[in-house]
Length: 485
Image 1: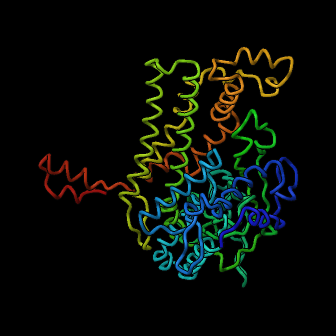
Image 2: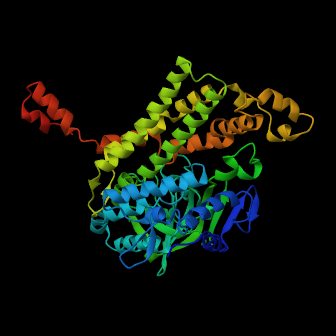
């Protein structure tokens, strides 16, 4: 059934082992580094119950149960547009961009479902587990996260030729399941219910079987799982000066698997490198859509912050300023065009689902991610130098310094000093803060690095169209179409 925000908070009080800033966290729902983002996720759960938003958040399943649109396996275009309304409703309500809410990670399980024939052919023991976990998330309304990146070690060596724990691996089998050791980085792990843990880009050599080729579901409360989190922004970011970092820090975690037992019913694929490589190649076929949609919202925030700033200071009529705003808009509309086209041209899958048109949505991801740094710098230029020199809110509130700041930051009868300060603080947090830099790096690597983004486009684009066009236009024989590739 659909969880409430309070039920979600209670579900996190399960004894999970979490550390941050060298401190053991007893309750992630109340700790200052986690409470803001836990409250955001709780708010998402509550939106499904409120009259004004419940229709956009959930649907009635065939058995009469209300389930979240986020977890619904997509079988029609209408399902994708419902998912977009879900994201639109959430992000507009919370007033910010959160990348990891679960809707952009559940797609990895749908990709597994699409690949079940191949997985069955390799090892038929575990494919039934995939369907069961998809249903478990749908009907349990569970926050499903996803773990991927390893600590790496020396990547010029095979994992077996160095400390084997640098890549997550199986250390033994038992009647109850497999025992795994190693580590994974994962965003939102400390406040998620469970995660799909999967291998990173293969480093197995030519072996048909490898203890490093495995995928499974892990409960975040497992007593032998340790969450070692990076230092958070929220606890050291005053809300008045950092309105985004103080609310939307998605805390990243190094998950340490200290001989963790994974029950057989939670194993999704195991040891066969062919299966692991196959899954890596199709992992983002669904999750890429909500990821790119998030960057569209980042684009809107960049445009809004920049436009307010130039209007505030009377520069919005200058042609040079309008050209820069148009650059931001062209980038934003390019992302929008890929999102719309990918659903309008959606493709049926081997598993009976409907995925976004693959080369269109992957090209959209390249556009969104590759241009993000330049667009942030463009917005920074439009916002002006005051975003890096403006005093903090305390100075505006001080009886001795406040009057001076009120004098110099009041623009006109429409823009008071307080509104000016708020806008500059927002822009600084959006563009210049630790949180802004972290989010930029996250967007760069969250769905694999740029070379893998381009590889996905190359793998999914249908080259037969351009080849056929040139073959006919140049008068080439049909034999050339059979050569290469």
